[in-house]
Structures are given as structure tokens and as C-alpha cells.
Image (tube, rainbow, N blue to C red; front, side, top):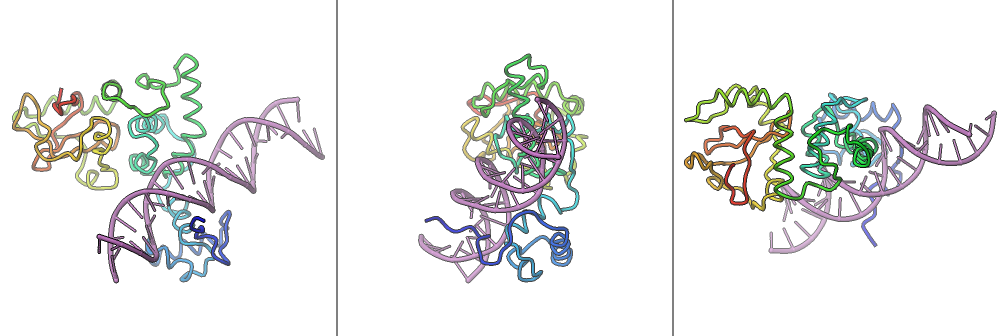
Length: 257
DNA sequence: AACCCGTTCAACCGCCTGTGA
DNA sequence: TTCACAGGCGGTTGAACGGGT
């Protein structure tokens, strides 16, 4: 016998939400903020379990949610991120702040999966050129490195960053003029990809100094930070500043190449 | 008009994780 | 250290809908 679902509590309603229920929930959040979901049913009188309330808010009622068709850019990002991260929908959603994880998951399952399959069986014209037509997660160092290199070189953002990197001071190798603000870094888009790196490269808990550039051994990596607009990644130096990485990657010995 | 079938997406389920007592 | 609980996450379901016959 497993644990009974929370919504099995007597009197709890299930199924589609009515406009009246939505209003009650929005009123609660306006007054109390999106927290303490446990108290929502008792405070509002809603006959919904706390999980249902939280889900309704985060997936539907929360401000700033974009609904409707996904743009080509969004589609491309989802495909690339899914190839890199697998079905980590919440992480992928953090790169598309106007979309919910549920939306992205649904879009993947109903549109993109089929699209990829068609492309795999057919010409492949529908896919970004760097997608290798596999539904499985990128599973080897070689594959993921190639995938990201090609993608980075083909995306408009990478052009911007390449320009920036070409102007950077080679002595300090501090990334400048990236248009990547601190606010963005610290916000929910600043997702740590170190887990993906760990699984791909066998890195276990990147530590300060563990990664270094062969041409600048005194430059060490203190972390990895992705670009919210794409799958370029920055390395952070030991002072927490970015030093760029767009066109270099790691080998199995944790050296950049 | 009635039925069938495929598609979409909101919502639920069950497990996992983080946190506080 | 252990336990309980709330919140988070990914997988799955099923009602609603639209197009075809």
C-alpha cells in the first residue's frame, strides 16, 4: 500500500479549475505571496489540495507566462537543451522564463519528439543542423562537445560573444561587454550546469582550481555558468568573474582545448 | 448528423529532495 | 541522526476539441 494521494482527502475537489476558483487563488497570492501552499485551502476556503493550488498558480495563473505558439528560437533552445540535459524540464524552463516546465514538456511530447522522429526517418531538413537525430541523451564526451561546438558557432548569440571574446584582454581574460548582466546571472536563469558536466565528463564536484587553461595555468575555474540565451557557457574565475568559453571545451583530463 | 480517431494540454500521481524540529 | 512534512519534479492520464469519413 502506497501513500494515498493528498487530493484523496475527503471533500477535496479534482479536475478542471473554474474561474471562481482561479479568482480565489489569485486573491490569496496577491495578499500572501506564492508561498505556504498548505494554508491555501483553509485560508481561502478552496476545496483543493495545496499541491493542486501550487500547480495551478505556477502553470497557469502566475504573471509573465507566455502562452501559444513557440517561436523557432524557443524550439531550437528546447531541442538543444533537451539533448544536453535530458528531460530536465524545470531546468530547461529556467532558460525560457516565460514558459512553464509543463508547457515545455507538453510541447516536447506532442510536437518536437515527432518532428525529430520524422527528421530522423526523412531528410533531416526540419532539424537544426547540429542535432544528431537521436532521442537518447547525449551520452558521450565526443558527441556533446561536437554538438555544442557546432551549435555555438552557428547561433547568432555566439557571433555576438565571439566578437566580445575577440576584444577581451588576453591577460585578464575577463569577459567584457557580454550583455550578460549580473542581475541575469543571479536570477533564476543562472542555472548551474555543473551536474551535466559531471555526468558527461565524469567531473565530480568541480572545485576551485580543478580546471585550468593549458595556455594560462594560473587561470582557474571556480564554476560554470551558462548563457541564458543559449548553450554557451562561461567559466568563472576564482574571483567569481567570467572568463569566456565559447570555442573551447574540456578533454577527459579536465583541460580546456 | 453521428461517429471515429488523433492531438492537445491541464491536471493528477507518485517519487524525490530540502528543511526544520 | 532521524523523522515528518511541504514543495518540486517528471511521467502519465483523460477530457476536450477538431478534422475526416
